[in-house]
Every structure is written in structure tokens, then in C-alpha cells.
Length: 79
Image: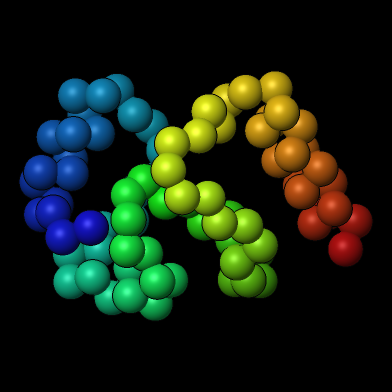
């Protein structure tokens, strides 16, 4: 949020990340979703609804989180 594209690209490259990254240079997206602290994660379903919010660090690759996401995905596919 607020960083230039070059700064974000350097960070992504240095970390070896391969995930999509949203650039919010002007803060419009942060304002839209009321993001005031970092890290903050929003889980957004395919229709654009926020179905989960987590503030602070999380171990997203833990067994419990992976189970949660599998349930959310299967629920979405059956809807």
C-alpha cells in the first residue's frame, strides 16, 4: 500500500514470490476495504463478497488453514 511498482517488484523478486500482487499506490483499495493495519488478509469469494478477515500474521500454510480453504472452495463449487 503506497509503494511504487518498482519497490514492490524488487520485494517480490527478492522473496521469490509467485503470487499475484495488488498495487494500491493511491490507497483506494485499502480505503474501500477499511485496511488500516498490516498485515491484513481479506478472503473474497468469486462474487466479490468479503467472507473472512484476519488482522495480523497467520500461518496460511498450516493444516488447519489448508482445511479451511478446501472447505471454502468445495462450498463455492457446489453453490
